[in-house]
Length: 371
Ligand SMILES: Cc1ncc(COP(=O)(O)O)c(C=O)c1O
Image (cartoon, rainbow, N blue to C red; front, side, top):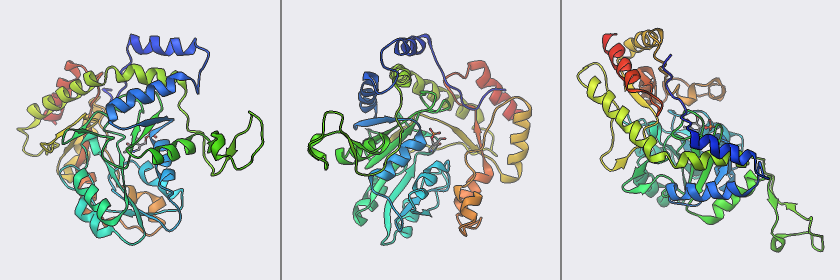
């Protein structure tokens, strides 16, 4: 089976991990900050490393003080971690439909969903393509709410010359193996606001306060530390930070290869009138995570099943989040977000990874065309 996504690990990555394993610190050591500084160069804002993209989202919501009664506006076309981590704080999940071309959240639908309880707009950069960040930024500023960007797919992408990570109030990344770079499991939070990043960091490190200036219990010894608000352990160990630092050295190469695959698929599939290819805004530079094609929804399952049967590891991204029983239990009904539903019904993600060979790419095209 040609996998729809796959990590790419080279000898430098392996040497970096081995060296971390032989060092004094497997976790909470110097490689964490080194990785965070390397990430900052790509994201254009200070970052903290955490243990997954899900953890990064949880930290982002902790940083803005999300709680019961707050509403967050999210797109249905995403992995449900975007919503789950907000729901766990007791927030109400509000959906705004997506745009039919990019499958990113539609700014008009966002504005229509705003209420006095809205605390944040959460955009997802579907397939690696940045959401309409300027429009979303002005809505967030108009209503005095936060803009959070779930950039699990889009590290290395940019919007109007600005890197993903430097625009939203808080941006979150995932380094799962199918993503644009990997640490096995891992993620990061970037923020243009130092105080929000500090809150995210504290939440990810058990809520521990170690700065004596902030202590509420005085006259203790050097052992002293306090918890003022609960946190969790979302640390990324040095061993995985070593892998991340090494992977970041290849990010441009990864992006170039993903773009080559994107262009190759586009060139070979554009004459199939029944296939709608992904579109790109002219002012974006995209580190493509997925290659989502769309076909008539009656033919989608036929094409999907036949591609799988021919050894092509296609995927469907995503079942609309509000279809999950956990949301249906809350009263959401299929059909409420028709653009998302029709995107889901017609979408197939073709294999896309740095590891994909020229031969595999052409096999995908040939088999897809023949079906
Ligand atoms: C859009 C989106 N958000 C969040 C996540 C969660 O990331 P992780 O798997 O690293 O927890 C994913 C991963 O699949 C994702 O695709």
